[in-house]
Image 1 (cartoon, rainbow, N blue to C red):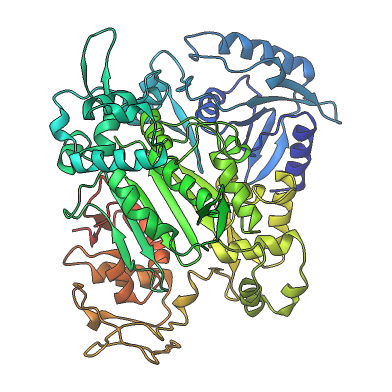
Image 2 (image 1 turned 30 degrees about the vertical axis):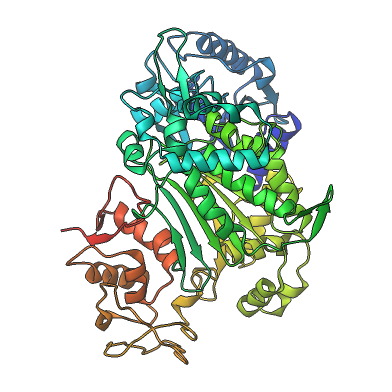
Length: 626
């Protein structure tokens, strides 16, 4: 990105045309309004919004002004308004006059800036032409793309006045309800609100009061709702109605990145939402400090941290789209938590961080939790989470939205912005001069070190600088040899640079220095080539019994990316094996393989998944493509 780009960013900021998400698209307008303008309008409206600038050509991250006059652009502006209000061009106009401005430049030329806000979830999809299945676009890290029919249907469903969990299910009855779950709900409800009138109802009456059973006033139809089945249903009944329904809790408290405790539908319990919550919450909160407090004469063993963690847990269950693959996955690590659920975020990321807005996907399920004293409807959920983490001076919670597949992930790290162990690690990489780097530069580097990578969007959450200033800082750190960029536009991410020029983080540090001290690994009989590797196996006792792993193929030396890829393909040439098994064979970090190496091999057609339609399947495995 050249200096001219920053000048235009500053100009757009002065005219209030730079979106908070810092999504920006330059387009040439020498021949009139470009066709791609409308695709970007649809894509910005259906994601996080952004600004389109006509009159500037961008190539190789450098920009050049077309040299159009103000008179030229006024004609384009009139043409733009005529087209955007034409229903055969686009189905809805979400702009006002202030969103479209002609800006004069110092050399007499002008540009036309169009600021597209994100559309409300009730308005989506914003599409071109008259057929949403053929004209709906979204934005990802590489630009605008045409949505699939399933993505369009998801947006339409999210905008319906009747929430998905209020739908009455055909041919499902009270026999599909797990009576023990409903009884336990009644007991917890009575403990929280002993005099509540709903408690006088029988099971069917109670379900009707809380949204688990419904009568349709217009059709006279009545029956079990989606909320009733998901919350209290028998697992076999749930997966009959929702084949992709999955709930998964993983506790990963060691450095091997393998779970040490897990709760998932294994046939030993009725895997519904209610049972999942009460099985997981004690495990999830067990490591939090337990204060002794008195409230109205009663002992209170929870504080704001417990309330925030519970809010994050309940939010994942309440906002999930149970009709699509992926499932709700909760992970507990030694120093952070991850909550992931399928579905689009019904508010923007900026709205999430501002708080005050609550748009649950499943209103009835939310009501059921609120009756038990869990969760809020007032839009204070995100505020409560953010405030609790800020109160402990920890890193700001990070919420990410994946487009394909639709998925929301919230990470809560119990670490400060400048932890000493991260600074020590940076000093080993770049020298002690890093310790003298104060302020925002050091915040960027420690964040990249802790989280594996960093982006402008992520840094906006805990830095007061404007996005354009953050970009300048990131580029400066790249120029000075601290970071390596990859990607383009808002999708650009930055990783720490190693002395050999490659990107680096704690996740990949194991590639050159494999330390299995303290691990429970039995390498007897294994043919391990440790040439060139610095391997410390002191006290190691690695047991791979039960895993289908040929340890004679294990390696520990540094490999080039191509060599590593070839070794992975050879390792799973005959059969499907899991990421954990691959990690053992090639002695590489599991997360590094899962997030960086294996997706590239799958995308290139060299690896195939055992479950190709559910990439997050808990039993996912891989095999070299035959």
